[in-house]
Image (tube, rainbow, N blue to C red; front, side, top):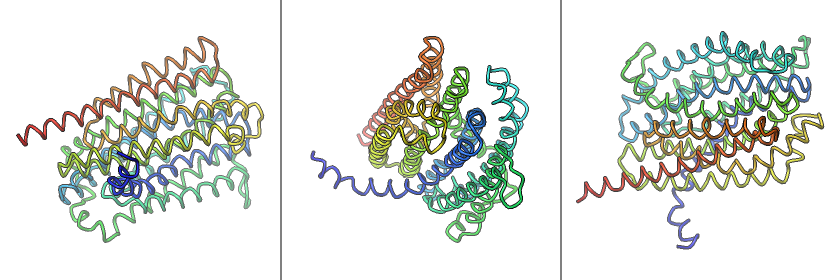
Length: 459
């Protein structure tokens, strides 16, 4: 079959997936851009040690954030599936229970980090100057967890129903607010005392509170959600539905924790090599995260599309949407890989004026160009499997890929064999390759098994 013929047959699937994914990509990028803006402002205005502190804090906070986001993501495929069955009542009730579950999750995460993580960081052989700068910044960031979780509750509900643009718009304006406030607080404009690294923390906190209010107001006041919200009760808690959300959300959260935790571990390994290497790692991983969010947006669209089709019992459409999602992600990641390769010496200039940081970051971006491909494939695999309700085996796959293969390889190559920060990134790339292959094989196995089940019903 020629490319033109294949494209014509699948044109609807490409464009409907892309139309849904586009706003999600921008929204996902927006959440990453909060950390990106913080990194740029600190690197440009404060210095290398504070930049290393940002790397340390983000290596802790990102694990907390994705754990919370993963729990909230349990709502999306359930909403998509129930909406596919035209079950508006369950959609409204799922929203009620997701809200309370996410608030509770945010509070628990705050307590764990506030009383545990910084104590652990102090005993991980990090530069004492970096740890001292990191402490107050992490505390302020952790105060933003509950508002972030409430925002995600309403965001995932709207996206599960296929409405993605409003979250995108709120995220864009939120990022603008974050950047403006961060510069004002860090530099001390308008009579405000310069706050340094703490200023970016306060900017992020204010930004996330504003985004929470805007997203909740949009969902609760919009006419398009009224058929669902007539079943929404603020004080309604049904532990069966909470369990149903957690059945998907908890494994999804662990998938994110295993992956992001591996990158957090890599930041700590980089810190053992040196503060400059840790700052360089932060620059490169920030850029890689922005590219990852593009594939993550496509994966979210894949979850919604495959979940809706799965709810209708249409496995042919499930397969179509899964295939085009894989293909779109590969195109995106090839483009970002080329950008990282050809502009590796220029992109770090956005974040730092330290020549040592720029040189090391440039070398890491060459490696990032390769692992982007594996990263895009694996996140779409997770999204597709999530849409059809397969979350437990993929969770085991991510644990194996990152913590049995990726992190030990990063430590072996970076520290034991003394390759340095490049060795750490080679180890991460190996973990991503393992994850992408195993998740793709899992997807093919599920589709093949479902096809046989359909054939047996027909015969």
